[in-house]
Image (cartoon, rainbow, N blue to C red; front, side, top):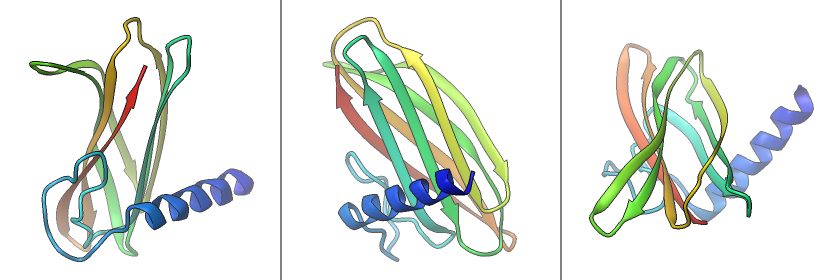
Length: 138
């Protein structure tokens, strides 16, 4: 279990090198992580689609010290010319300062897919909404 945690922390650190969090407030970035980071030490989102349609949706969120709860939704959406259509949706939550979620599903049609994460992070009585997304093509 400690080995998996080390791998997750290394993956998160590498993701943060590519897309750092800042202290400014803004809406979710395109294909990335929102910058609302008062309660969040780090966030990593992975969308991996195999050639057979097997899809892995992974989110890893680390709250700042004092975080008591992380809860929200993770949605896999198909991007179309007229917007997006939800393919799969999961409620996600965890008491404590760390949330790791890994879900697998199968998609049937080719196209572009987006994994969207929106969670509320509660720390020291203050709740903040943090969101992010990752896009991949099948």
